Image (cartoon, rainbow, N blue to C red):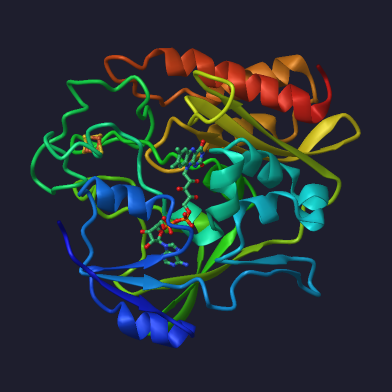
Amino acid sequence: MQTFTFNRASSADQAIALAADAQVRFIAGGTTLTDLMKLGVEHPARVVDINRLPLAEVLPNPDGSLSIGALVRNSDLANHLNVKQDYPVLSQALLSGASAQLRNMATTGGNLLQRTRCMYFRDNLSPCNKREPGSGCSAIDGNNRTLAIFGTSDRCIATNPSDMNVALTALEAQIHIKGSGGERIVPIGDFFLQPGQTPERETVLQAGDLITQVTLPKPMANARSAYLKLRDRASYEFALVSAAVVLQIEDGRVRQARVVLGGVGTVPWRALEAEQALVGAPASEATWQAAAEAAVRNAKPQSENGFKIELAKRCVAHALATVAQTV
Ligand SMILES: Cc1cc2nc3c(=O)[nH]c(=O)nc-3n(C[C@H](O)[C@H](O)[C@H](O)COP(=O)(O)OP(=O)(O)OC[C@H]3O[C@@H](n4cnc5c(N)ncnc54)[C@H](O)[C@@H]3O)c2cc1C
Ligand code: SF4
């Protein structure tokens, strides 16, 4: 049995002071961390409970942005009136994830930092560079049907499994971080790290950094958004492919567009080529197809997941048509 010290923090500063070491983990909803500790994948020397910190509110700001505390539960966020009205893509993404019970426990900060569902990562008997740097990657020549086609390296091809992260990327969210060196704000596009040669490093967080909140910028004027998730079964399943789409259409033409793919990237995958194909084009089926083709142009399939390219194309085209109401 692996023993560890357990502390309950009553302030952010106390939590950060207790955690200034790579062997420490914060615990929020616990739906990722406890699983990984039971499997022996994570073995922190100290666990710091942050559930008593005052970070569980969703607050509209005078500039039209929305602040979401790191401890806001996924269910509360999905059902918050401002989120449902102004950022439906986020509400839909959250409600497509896990189960009602899990969403009642899972938090915004914990969801951001959930770990990959690559089967070898959770199996201590298999080599895995992410779990044990330098041990090798069992997935590259193994079972990789569900893994990534974008952002991979010769060290790791695992996907970021979160639905919420895909929507937050489409909304250009900002992550607020507090650490021993002070506070900083990181755009979500810079928050996640592709595996490269160091797949064990998944974000720009340093040891002891606490996520305090996430801010959503003021919603794009007259924008419509949606999240489409394709998976092996209809619920309680991670995405094979998903798409978060935000569109602003005026006079029959696309003025602004954001397209982000989930289930296919080592990080939430922003399809900039698709966005370029959309902006200025007429809101039509031909445009959605062209954007879908552009979205997968640089895909690099593994031995078992070439099907994700066609699936991603269809997912993007259908999500765009749904948002633009041309279906
Ligand atoms: C059976 C099952 C099915 C699931 N299906 C889906 C799915 O379909 N889609 C999906 O997106 N997700 C799914 N999930 C994952 C689920 O969404 C995550 O487990 C959850 O969001 C994690 O949140 P948490 O608060 O429980 O995190 P915790 O387990 O408490 O923490 C996770 C990690 O984040 C760190 N952490 C937590 N809060 C902070 C903070 N404020 N600052 C710094 N570090 C922090 C912890 O130290 C830990 O490393 C599923 C999970 C399970 C168990
Ligand atoms: S894909 Fe990444 S997480 Fe999966 S076995 Fe390879 S190194 Fe580990």
